[in-house]
Length: 109
Image (cartoon, rainbow, N blue to C red; front, side, top):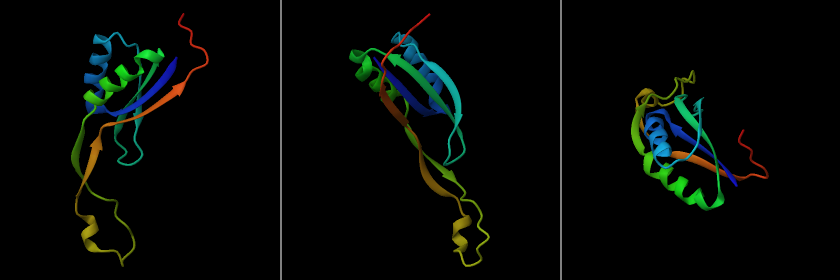
């Protein structure tokens, strides 16, 4: 038995939820906030049998797409900093961060 923690961008969470339902994968959905862009994320907690781990990872990979997004870097009070730093820059967002952990015991009541 494994515990899969999958952190995805909010834009991908509804599609991923639907895919889990279609594949009969039970998942707990938590609203979380990312540290880098301070944007909304969704964390899925999934208890799954060892033989289905690859299937779940493929569902996550297919549903959580990376995309490009523009962001404005934070303003620094350092006057020696380059003035071009206040212009928006393009960053890659989305995709998924996934942890697969061994579970000693799993109960469903």
